[in-house]
Image (cartoon, rainbow, N blue to C red; front, side, top):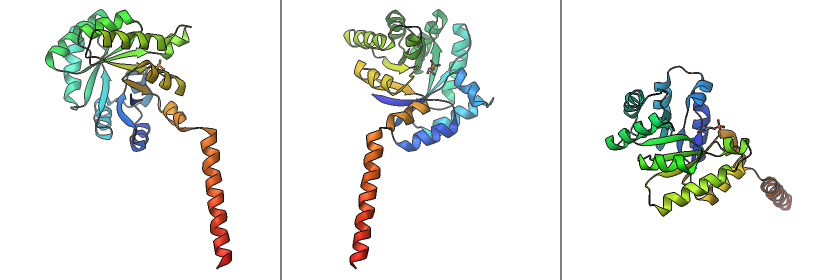
Length: 221
Ligand code: G3P
């Protein structure tokens, strides 16, 4: 499973890129708004330089015609830009147009296997199924990932399943176990993935023992 970072914050993306584990970036209007820069084109172009893999930029038009106009523009911003399309009737129509034009897409705000089947039939490159928001209302977001992966494999769709709306490190493991191709992870959660108290304890113990050894060598000189 590939790991993407889910943020539009350039400092977070720089730090994540240096970690050596990130293959792409997803943004959305909320993340771009948090970032605060109104010059979205420059932000996305900078992200494309920081991370050579897929960079998702989301359409905000509500009709297919408007989304297609936006997406064609976004695709010009970088060869690794994927056009993110919200899962609506109009968004799926736009996805079909992008597919036919060879523009890669990330169909987002998917919450059911039915929606994923429709997105896959429109040729979606990525299908972003939201885990956390489903869990937030008391249902099982990971189960939907499992369903989508199973149907994708059963019917040999080309779409990649992207686990989104990740709330904690366990969601990442569960998404991998469910067969997701990608998980897009908030920077805070990415950092949490590294932490284990026994690792911290073990590193400190190795350091202390090494320093003790160095000290004993020094005294025997
Ligand atoms: O990529 C989608 C993701 O940003 C949504 O996450 O936490 O708003 O459900 P969240």
